Image 1 (cartoon, one colour):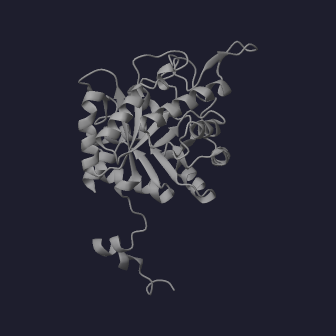
Image 2 (cartoon, rainbow, N blue to C red; image 1 turned 90 degrees about the horizontal axis):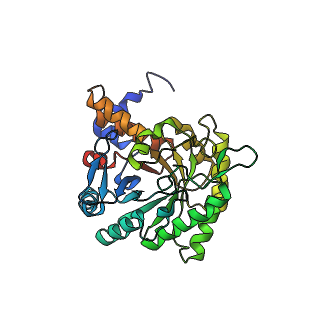
Image 3 (cartoon, rainbow, N blue to C red; image 1 turned 180 degrees about the vertical axis):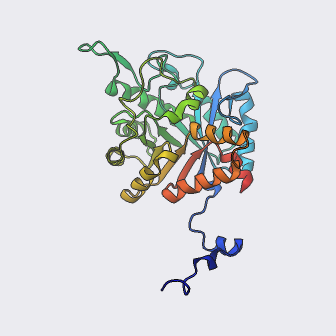
Length: 328
């Protein structure tokens, strides 16, 4: 049947009718809020390219955690800015490192809040790469040594679990990282700790504000040899399939907005929950346009996050989470 018998606008006539037939719903349970922690005291330092997002010292972190819990947000992801950097990222797997200390504090203040630990070396290495860098004897070029880096990533994950992290989120994109971390966690007695793998992490221009926030920009070269080419989709499926075989419990696509097709592909091809990372550059663009009066921030944010969910994301890591909590 066609018009005039069929009139699609009948179900759009009122807000109540539109709500009744709404296909995609965004709730606070879908959101994970990223937090940056740093050494020092009395620090609440706004990140210039990310208005409303701050680096917190541990003595200022409790108030932020209380605000997050009161807002109804159920999950956070912790990123650390260390005091000390070196070639092998020692601070990443220090039992008293900044993420480990923050995790212990958060679990003390808010035991039911899900704490996800970002597991990488880039913030902790003096060269800013996500693994150990060695000189290639044949070419003379500096290269990230995949296999040598795995042992340090395992040590990092285990130390985070020992501190009380509810979930490990390795973001390094080394081959075999899920297998190594899963084996390391199991051997250390943390078989119950899930892995949210950054399975599909693109070498993206959208990460700029994060690198300012976490002081993690590479000091030379780039990350294109281990993060994915933005042109590739089939490769994303191979990456996700490998991570599932190695023991991942959840998959992530990062960034989100330019990769909605990738989110959809993972959702259609695999049974695991899929997370989308609404990254710093996406956040910064919305904030900048809103500050200039060019867009309505609330409408744009809600539409974007709904688009990620509609594409297939079960979870969304987003700096907008506190704003969304107020709007909802």
